[in-house]
Image 1 (cartoon, helix red, strand yellow):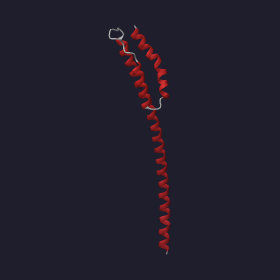
Image 2 (cartoon, one colour):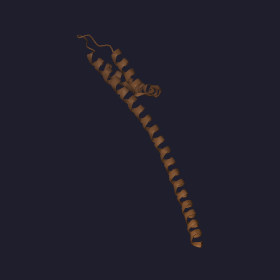
Image 3 (cartoon, one colour):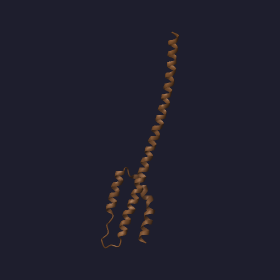
Image 4 (tube, one colour):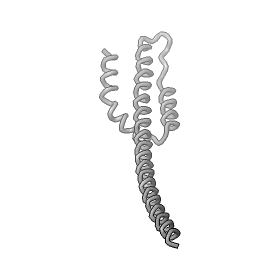
Length: 119
């Protein structure tokens, strides 16, 4: 029963935890927070009947931070894709400008040939 309540509460609180991940700036910071929270989980005494709760706490914390890490990776990937799109647009613009320059150079070359032939 306690296990079911714990799992249910983890799923209810996961949106709040996911929103908190938006404030993490880097993977290093995320790993540091995970380490602190992991170390803060109280280890049960050897004769305790809640030993499985401790393991569930560790598993739930791992799942939460895995989700946070994936969210951070997703945001970083989106930023990289946006920069990639910008770069592609700049390359397309450069290619267009280069083809215009080539056309102008061809026109200039034709005029110079015509002038040379007329002399």
